[in-house]
Length: 78
Image 1: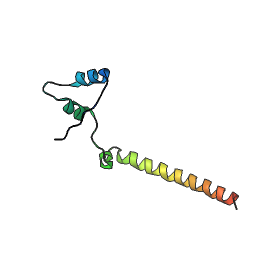
Image 2: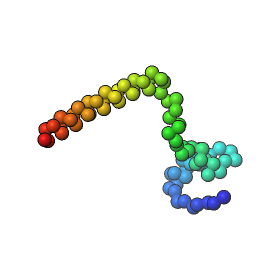
Image 3: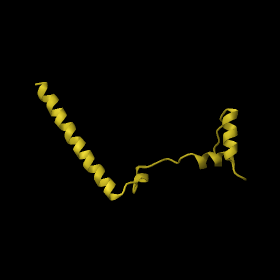
Image 4: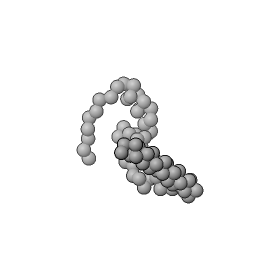
């Protein structure tokens, strides 16, 4: 396993050490308390079907309003 040396403040070290559990390395602590790489798939199920439907409707209305504004601006520029 590859390793890296880092420099941290005493305060950061003390905070990290306070999170350390028995028989846990500092690498283990960092891996445990920091988020793993995220994926869009992590968002699946975040909204209920009703919330998702409401959001889709809101987005559609917002897009329509934006399109109407853009058409007005385009018309004014002719």
